[in-house]
Length: 489
Image 1 (cartoon, one colour):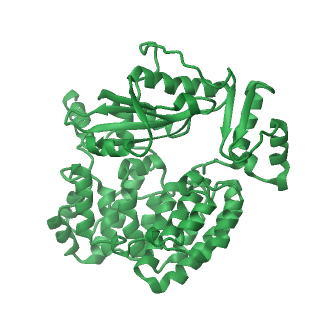
Image 2 (cartoon, helix red, strand yellow; image 1 turned 60 degrees about the vertical axis):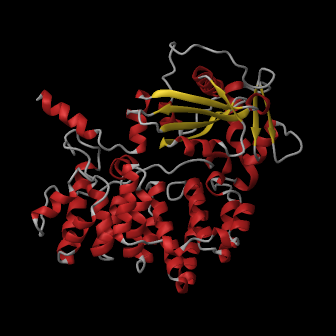
Image 3 (cartoon, one colour; image 1 turned 180 degrees about the horizontal axis):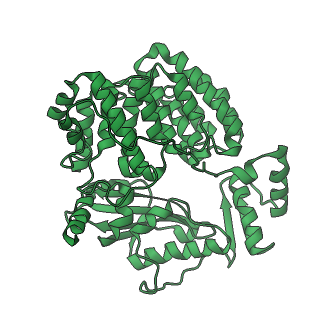
């Protein structure tokens, strides 16, 4: 029994999504160079960069946008297994960094977090993953005292009135009147905190004060999925899809072998395999699932359904996969969701726009799963320019829907609204600027995902922003080759 358990642990290490790798493995790497923005103390905001070294020479890195005056960790992101040159290119982006010790980096980050927490402000949600690039915050890390705030007080520097409205109530509640200061960059003068709160709380019954920044809560209740597999094709088909020697791609010869089978038979079996494995893992990954190593079964099935599937049952199955939780999609697809889903959604859904529309309008689904729909629909207009008007009309209805439901967040949240606009840039949908303006007027669009209205309205007419039709949908062998390259990297 002990030997079997050891084998399972070794096999499970064959494939980890980036998020799983961060949670389970990155702290085992040696800490590398660390950096900090040179002017962080002057401006109160800057990046702290922490790297870890892989034995083969690659580097994993996390960037933390830290506000030492008030907000703590405002944002963070990470990269896994970069070449040194790739990291240097990222660092050489016009920002001035100076090298620092890990202890300095650690204290700046956790000190800023503690300072923000005094005001009731938690780190950005991205820190739930990027914290693993850091050592645990224990007494083993030497304490370095830095000065936070300004003149001993929390000092909020808000980019606009909307951002101020998100944080002023927390400052007032946790610190008390007169125990903090703030300034709004877009204003030339300071505004009394009570006036700011009063104005925004009652301005046309605006939802901004309470709703901005909320994310959709996942609430999908899945149906019962098949508990047994009923397959019509040869046994080797399922065995090939479960082969752990190529976990996120299929070799050309196996792809051709599968596609040479009767397509109706393959389609039926692929759909059944997907539904069966959803049933096995939709409520969590069992300990004995994929005990011989990660197989990438669902990725293979989604790829192949783009070739042999239909726009009815097959598209329904693919959309059902996209209804699953973020834990499910992270396990099965890692950070390859766009590469896996978008081509198949395009191939199966290009004549089923109403079905795709209904999916986008469903309540309580994961934001990043819905985003694949926007990319696939935009690709229809790029590959078939004669359908531009049809696609624009589809997005117009989505924009109007989003503008209406954004305050409730359960159908559309601020991040999804911002990410959708990137697809509209790809197809140069200038006709939709009035609807885009109305959506921005809600104040509920995540500007970090797309920029503000002025930026979007400028870029939507910039030819360099137009998507490339030749890259929208590639031949299946090429797509598997791209996945293989990701795996071998």
